Image 1 (cartoon, helix red, strand yellow):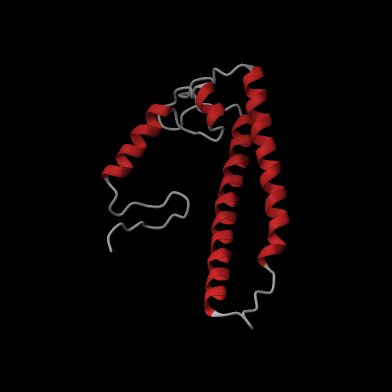
Image 2 (cartoon, rainbow, N blue to C red):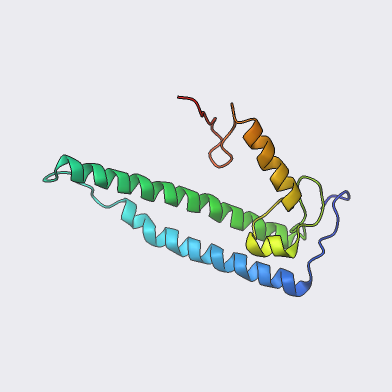
Length: 145
């Protein structure tokens, strides 16, 4: 923990509650991804299907993959959060160094920014949407056709 950051103001009880929440969510997602993985490797033969059925199957497969990717990113965030908890760096805004409120952490345990910094970040992001980078995929986002 760097010396410029403030010590987290969470009580042991609050930290324990948040850690249990994060661990339970991580376990749920890990189990879900392990159970769902074989589903993606099912033989998706299109023989005997009409074009509409094949298109619907393709849309479903793409949606499942998108959700699995999102869940994979969320799983990484949960793991990072547990590491921050173990290193006593949890609950400190990565932008300004202030404490993140228990209320915010309870609503979103993976928060790394206080509400003020997050709102400012989102305002800046919306004001400068051209050439913006996707935070989850690291690719440029284009809003023009």
